[in-house]
Amino acid sequence: MEIPLAFQIGALALLVVILIADLLLILKRPHIPSTRESALWVGFYVTLALVFAGVLWAIGDADHAVEFVAGWLTEYSLSIDNLFVFVLIMSQFSVPRKYQQEVLMVGIIIALVLRAAFILVGAALIERWSFVFYIFGAFLVYTAARQIFERGHDDDAKKETFLVRQLRRFIPIHDSYDGAKLRTTVNGRKMLTPMLIVFLSIGVTDVIFAIDSIPAIFGITQVPFLVFAANLFALMGLRQLYFLLGDLLERLRYLKYGVAFILAFIGVKLVFHAMHVNELPFINGGEHIEWVPVISNWTSLGVIAGAIVVSTVASLAVSRIERKRAVAEE
Image (cartoon, rainbow, N blue to C red; front, side, top):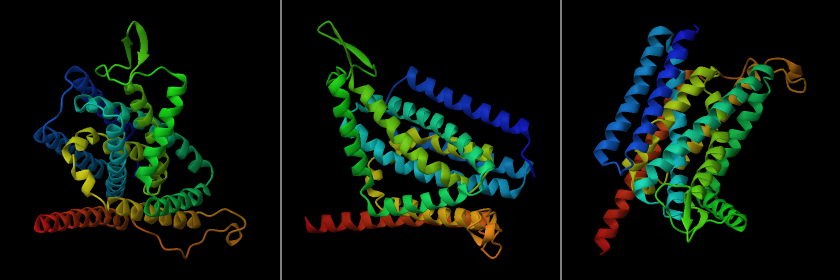
C-alpha cells in the first residue's frame, strides 16, 4: 500500500519546522541544558517517532510502520556511535560547554543535508541497477569488520589532528574562542577562531557516518520517504541526548559491537535481496535465486532492537562491576 503523497509532504514539512524551531531556540538562548531538560526533549522526540510509526500503521500498513521503526533504531544507534567522535572533537579543541549545543546543532544540520543528498543518489542507483544491493551489502559487512577490529574513534581523532595541522599552515587561526564566533580581531588583525576547525571536523565526521548509514537504511526499506524520515528522527534529539548521556557515553564500550552486528546483519540481508533480484549474467546465469531465505521486517526489527539492548546492558553491567571492584580495592 502506498503512503499518501499529501502525508509525506505534510510530515516532512512539520519535522523540518520543528528542527528549525529547535535551532532558533539554541541561537536565542545558548546554555548548558540540565539533565531534566535533556531527558524531556529526548523523551519528546522518541515519543514523536513512535507516534509517527503509529500514524503510518493507521494510514498505510504494518510493513511501512515496522520498516520505519527498524530503520529509525538502526540510524539512532549509528548516530549515538557518532556522538563518541563528537565527544573526542569537543575535548580535543576544548570547546566551552556553553557553546557545545550550537556546535552539535550545526553538525546535525550538516549530517541532515549530506544524508538527504546520499539518499537521493542511493535511491537513483537502486532504481536503475539492482546489483547495487551486492555492493551495499559487501560494504556494510566490511564496515562491521572494521568497526570491530579497528580503533575507529582514535583513528578519527588522528585524522582531525592532521586536518588541523594542514589548516594552520594556510589560515591564521587564533588559539582562543570568542564566544561562538568564527572570526575575531586580535591586535587589530582579523583571525579565525578554533570554532571553524570544530565545525569542519564535525562536517568530515558527518560525511564518514553518512556513507555508512545510508546503505544500512536501504537494507531495511527502499522507500525514500521512510529512509529520510528515519534519518531525520534519528538526528532530532541527538543534541539533547549528548548532554543527557554525558559521561555515560564512556561506559557504552560494547555499543560499537552491537552496531557492528546490526551492520553485518543488514549487509547479509542486502546480499540475500540482491540474489532474489539478481540480473548479473555471471551469477546463476542472470536468473533470480529463489531458494535464498527472505528476512522479514519483523525479524529485522527484533534483531536490531536485541543488538542495541544486549550491547547497552552488557556495557552498563561491566562498568558497574568494575566500579564496585575499584571501590573494594581502595
